[in-house]
Length: 517
Image (cartoon, rainbow, N blue to C red; front, side, top):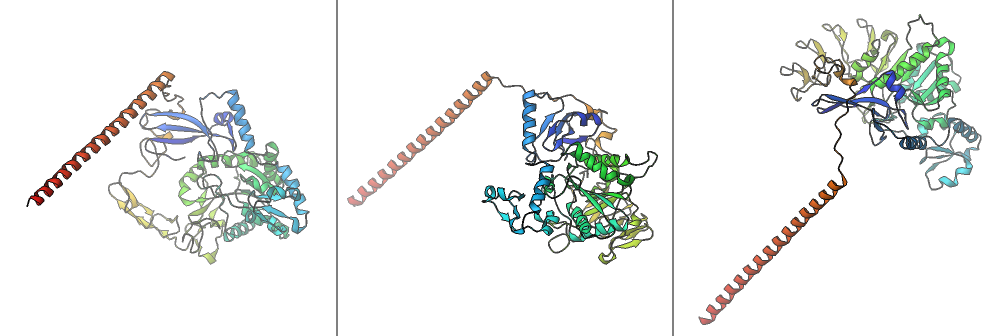
């Protein structure tokens, strides 16, 4: 959620909020607090966990709002109407029937994004269809399905083959034998293709994704319809247990979680869900064991401070992640020269070998692999570049900054040359400091303002009498305006007639004088 000068919105995470959260089509909603800087007050409300745009999901409810039974029942009916047309079990049965059909009878409706059985052909006759769907195509459903490219909700930007192959090779090299793929369908597919080719060592994968269309292609053990923003399994307890079973196999050994969330998503909500996956994994471990579940979190580099705040043991790698269907986040003439997407991990950076053929090299001082343009700063004692360019050291700030930045004496920091002085680059919503967030602000007069439940004064209800009076006033005003317009037109018409009469009179007088001469 964004913030503005007039009002700000922050996420509230606690067990009580989760237990009382109402449901929308995307699972349990999240609790937010709306803060008004001028009035120094806050009000809490529930909104959709997956959609930041009200156009995608318009659920909204104040925390202290009382919902009637009728409205609650209507809401439940609406939520059911927005669920997939088939259960996961039914999708699996349909898939088994589909693959048993001859090649000429395997039809896919591109409009409905559905594998069609022969008895359904007539219903989709007017739709665009793809015929002769091969088993090879069924193994790579991300190439068959149209990507959902809403960056705030689905953001189904798919890994380029280069990135996907690098991740799989790295996973094999590090010795992992199971991969929990959260929002990474391309990686899941590549692992399954490798499995079908019977390559050694054997790697298993389970996909968790909010796109229910993958239910058509994978069993309940291979895919779970899942919302990563609220850790919600649409398949219920059986789906949650399938995920836990996958994580806890072999006492939780040799498993890694790889996640590629939508870039418009809330970091705090994602981190909270990922920690729940870690808790599921820890049920198979020794309680005295303080090991962490290995994680690859793929996200833009400028989210590094927020990710490290949630996971202090993480570090950011220099590897640039590319996408096939993203206009900017890919190499080549059609994309950026440098992709801003990176890998955040709790594994030792020195163990993650980046490809030398792409210009990555090992820094013996930092004990990690870096990009070719990243230079070690002797003052900072680190390879400081984040965005793929060579950064420069600012003596005044005593840190390395982007090459396009200059030091501003007015702001007391480095910024773009054409920046507006005095504007803070994020941080505390109350006092403007970049050192802390609003909830930790020491200057606020309301130390627990985030949990104030005081509601804003409600607007006075307009009675029927007031409405009728307002209507009468508006009619009178319109009548006056209309009358004024008519009088103006009448006056203008009369004036024109008088002018014409005077003109004709002058002409007749002139003609009389001419005849007299």
